[in-house]
Image (tube, rainbow over all chains, first blue to last red; front, side, top):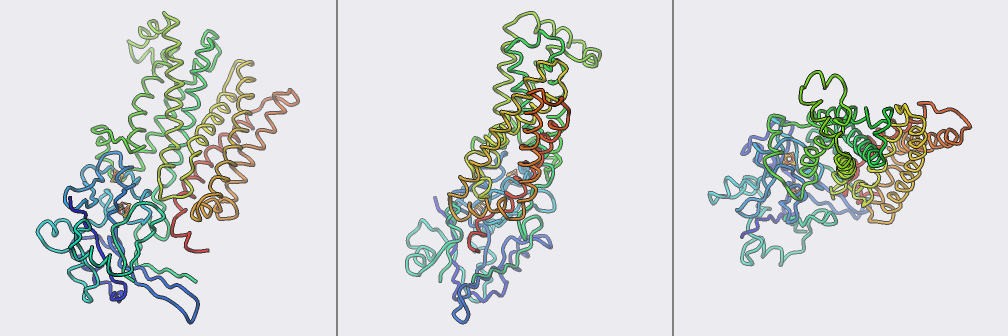
Length: 179
Length: 315
Ligand code: SF4
Ligand code: SF4
């Protein structure tokens, strides 16, 4: 089974937020809510500072505390690409998954169910790229199967220095940031 | 220096997680209290105390079911997608403590109802014809009584433990990630239940027994709190920082003043004097214990949501 993941080149990302706007438009994300967002980290001591811009979203982790804690099975791992999804009509809005996600990637949709990034599975199943990846003007994002050693994402991970986010939380996130 | 800026501002998520409001701590408190009451009344039944018409066994189970129902109602209030609540009972998710909890609650009710039927209140006898018939059946054999006592202890323990496990399995929240949280909630449930029983007991011996047991529960609770903090402080940076929320951080005052000071140490002191007949029994100590148990749930739920792996990147 494929295991979809993303690789994001922080050397190319300029933090223009096109991915954020594309996601909101594509997925009808309500005003005041975000499925993806931009984080800017600054490390070091002046004048030796290191700035990194990250487009963040649900990491579609391999170990999914959000799925494990869900009492109804609404949070589940999809057959295609092991993408982590929420079945809205099964969700009771208990918010256990929001508390269980170390990335705070989920939120409660105004209609009451838990919501988050879907890797635009509705597009991916039609052979298209997720909206954020497709729209990025610097082409800093790649999307594909991490289990296929020939995929763009797998090649980038082995060829460039990279890191994932909060690996100490133990969820094996599937988004890699090239540095 | 490390600085982090985010464009995300999701409600109840940013700037820090606060997805659970007052409903969850109130539910956890009432769940713990009922768990403790079930264990205590179950034990009393096994000891044959139901033969004493003044025993708390005759009226506390009915109060327990009311408390539990209020707790379940607050839990329901917390749900954001209320119309789909029935989805809890069309599946069993083995990895989800919440799923376990909803099924355990279904088992707790019959155990409590059987307990109530030992001596049902008049209002139930008048409303439902079958009540007195079932009550006669239950009272006809001592073995039925023993089974009811035993079931109440087992389901009481399950209920008390689950309220802690619910939080401690959330790996994302370092403060909850303690392997003794279930024990803390169980002993806290027992201490609030003993305090409640102490307050409402009519029988002098029972009251004395409950006050003495409460002292033991309070001492155990204090030890478990220390163990939990020691465990967190000797773990990873994220866990150390989560413990610091209670050790100098924003939750220090409510925790040490209301949970430990007013909720454990002061009532322990008062009750030690009372059981040694230096002063009379009053509702003051039990009320302090009950309030301490409630504040404990609030502090743990709020501080736990506040604790985060990201914080470990900042000093
Ligand atoms: S990032 Fe959060 S919501 Fe997404 S799969 Fe991982 S734990 Fe679940
Ligand atoms: S909020 Fe919905 S998806 Fe999340 S754990 Fe509860 S039922 Fe499952």
